[in-house]
Image (cartoon, rainbow, N blue to C red; front, side, top):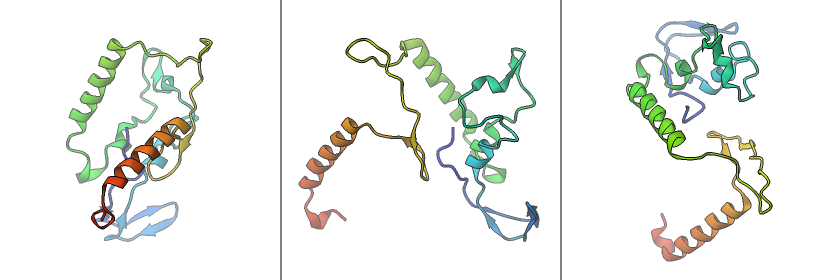
Length: 154
């Protein structure tokens, strides 16, 4: 699970080459984790939610690159807490699955509402806000900003 689509800047200690371009030693590079995790050569049909792509004959498919290699960083600056973070994510998700009956919302007639998979594409991708949630956030912001005198806002 990535927080940002790019990794933190890294100092290139030795000369490298990428797609025919020479990158001299001493350059600062910013790895694009999002692109690595959406590489069609590594992950078939990467824009489709398909957890089964990581399985083969009931076992983990060793031919598919582990996405954890790109989402926790690289080199000396790889996240030192990645193992604890991964375990915490696992425990949280397992607890939620055990404690809640997760299903689609229903309309007043009882029909399932299909969730939208559209996202705002920016530095950090997130689902679009519903109009009800947007208006609630705007009302709350207006109420809070009215309490702060203009000269104290900055």
